[in-house]
Image (cartoon, rainbow, N blue to C red; front, side, top):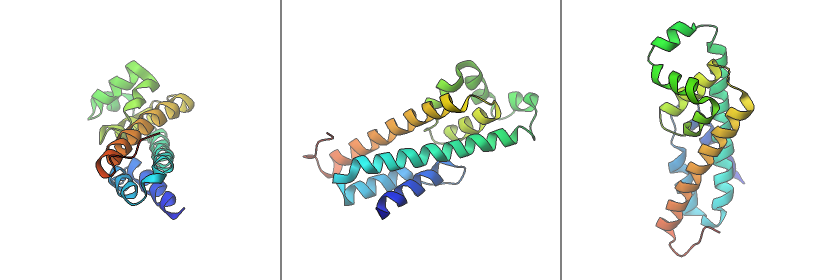
Length: 147
């Protein structure tokens, strides 16, 4: 049980603007207890998604400080245009290093619908953790199947 909380917390922190490596944590826990890989993926996915939702709300608060003109011309121009063009669906890439944090903050800043945004964040992050778990399971225990 403590391992799941550690996985959740590590994934949450990694999804905020604080640095963290939740994938390495997941691989380490799978190496220790591969029979619990699915629960570890669930804990990591929930924690990482909630961390991104935290960044989303920080973006909503940031709208007070930044005008639309500054955001459209600044360092975030490419991510800004991506979100304006594709909306919440672009949040499938919230898992990506560096860009993912920016996407979450900008999604909040643009006030994208929280339900759809959270849905697409969760799908992208869960898919990423399943891939990491599959690789870790094959690396450490080739005889273990995923299902």
